[in-house]
Amino acid sequence: MALIGSAAGLVAAALALWNAGVAGLVAALAGGALAAAAQGTAVALLRPGMKAGTPEFVRRWASGIAVRSSAALVLVGLVFVTRAALPPLWMVLGFFAVLLTLLYVETRFLE
Image (cartoon, rainbow, N blue to C red):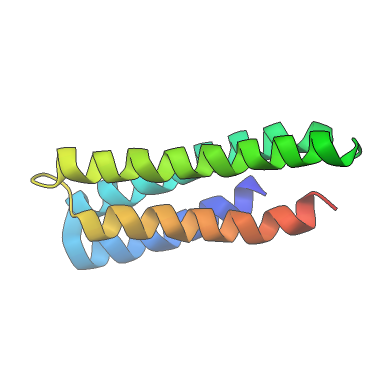
């Protein structure tokens, strides 16, 4: 799972480096790292509840949603704090490239 997320993050980082230089690269890697941390935490919360009853599963699933939503809010804060030094577009692109890829892979990983 981490390998696929890393590949998506590296593709976004390479595009950022090509288009926006080193600042774009740093921004894309920061966004991707935030997404990977959020998704890893969400999966770690959900995995023990996969065989549990419905109330426990839903509680863990909702906790994962909360972690991802909190990461999106942290991303917004990072964009505002670093907008003078790092290109916001590449930070957001790095975040969503990794997060959406890992969300797709999560459905296969947790089966």
